[in-house]
View (cartoon, chains in turn purple, cyan):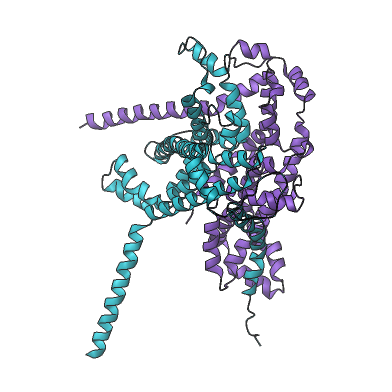
Length: 284
Length: 325
């Protein structure tokens, strides 16, 4: 009688040990490349070439000098990326919330067809329009401008979809009715009552929109040709070029500088980010 | 005293107007424009007036039948997607099964999730350049590691070999995305009614049976979402292969997006060919999405609807019969 449960307990202990080993291995796999990046950012090129080390060295400042002497201007790239990502994020979350509210709060004829349409738009790969988009912007003389990277963010079908699911679950139309009785116009009801109520959803979507815009390479690479307009990912692509061929320490430092702000934000907000991915995945 | 209800439905149109306008201007018009360019002879730096080819499908025909580079890019894209997605979904499902199994009760789940998701947040271009430095030849961190562990005597030129180059690109994609897939799936499992698991436990189902009979079928919608987003992401794969090896060696990591970019913007200005390639990609995405929707459709729900219809019909018939009596 006693043997069966004991073997089961032992079996569970073995499988649990295996699970922990796999998870720890995967966690190390996630950290190691970044750790090597940060360590190598502080090592000189000969040190990097002589082999792998997991301990930092003392060449951070000299690497920085080499890095900044050439055409790499992380502050400029930072500022440009920041302007584009912030503006695009604001456009995305505000107009997506507005669209979703329009879909949920009002009963209009085209409501269901419009929603189906948004679902379809979600599946269009953006390269499908890239050539036409470039030609169009070229005619408007909008290449090397930030507008074509910001304004299209107003129409973000995936975010509208998410906001709609959120509103369906949380919005009670009685609040809207009460605001109407108090004489609030439809727009001010949205701006002053509904939008603040949507903050949890807005915050998670804002994080993703920001990261997505910050990481975008394809469109900026096509549209921005002037050096002073370069975004962070384009700056990174310069590190791959010939000018840094032998300056390994500086390459790693350049990479570290582009990743550092995202690391800081990630570890501050990781709980919300994870919850946000989870929320985004649960549909219906 | 109550006034007649105001009709608010016009606000539905007003509130969705900015979305519609932005979509028409920045998406639909460029898509149609791209489609038209695909039928023209538009090339060169200075735009010429649009001129439709005598044989409108010439660009498409050239691409599909006479352009080995384009065909290669399609094959590469498919290959890279399959080789990163299959291990990704398998590992994500395995981790999901572990993390959501209450009998196992894995500790430190929160920390594991934060760490496994981390690669997803860092700029893909940073990761691409980072990995090309890590796999450097003759002395790079990975080569040092291999020699330290005694796996190889001489340095390996990873980036010059087609198989290892493709393998590394697949690995980077896998490594960046499996954490994301896992979190989405874990959330999906948490959304399943716990009563289902309880009754399975009472019926004496083991872990495997529970996972394959209850968890997986309940995850259908979320799996569909994961499949479609991953497929669109795989079709448009750009920054990792572009910055990792710029398509080399010998075009073995050239993806369709890179082909389009290369044709139009890297000095050759073949806008017509790039546009036709974009349209082919668009059609492939649409067809594959359609197939996925069909395969993953809710068969039970369709059956249920049919059954309800039948019940409704027989009720009607019964009523009619009753009336006759």
